[in-house]
Amino acid sequence: ILRSLGRVLASEPTLRRRAVVGALGMGSFSIFWSMLSFHLAELGYGSATAGMFGAIGVVGVFVAPLAGRLATGPNPARLNILGLATAALSFLVFFLGARSLVAVGIGVVLLDAGVQASHLTNQTVIFGMRPELRSRLNALYMVSYFAGGALGTFASSLSWAYGKWPAVCATGAAFALAGMLPLLRE
Image 1 (tube, rainbow, N blue to C red):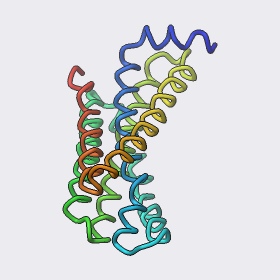
Image 2: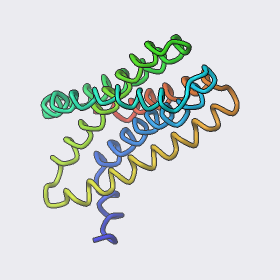
Image 3: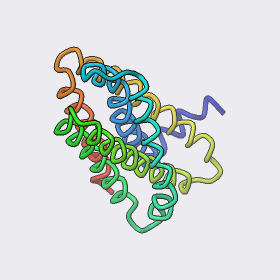
Image 4: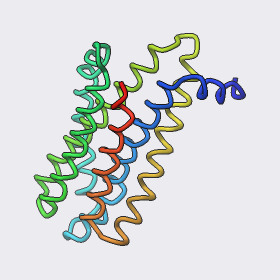
């Protein structure tokens, strides 16, 4: 089964496209969460405040059923693009409201909802491709998804080192916007 993963990946352009979209979405998510505690520390807040934002992010759970229903529609790429645009918008909110905990909270809700909508749309599309390969499709997608998260964490550390919070926000938005590019063909 493991040896067949390369063939599955090579034979499924939709999977490859959705894996890139998912990786970049998760990358943008990781960019924010990897550097939030550093940003909050500069504002004089501790880890409890960062944890509070994690609790606020649970709002994304409410997006899941709606995204699942919309993803089965005639053009799921639109939902992906909307989700990734929402994630990119969250980084604008993080940048403009950098010193406001309320603004950061609003950004967390936008980021979580956007990334969740895109991720669930990707999964709906790939699970509908070839039911007999569902486990392999999911394995390949999720490896890409979490590799994107690792890449986002790496990119966020570089961004923080070279430009602090504004650079982190620009990098997070860039990942989300780049995630839209593979969808332009659909």
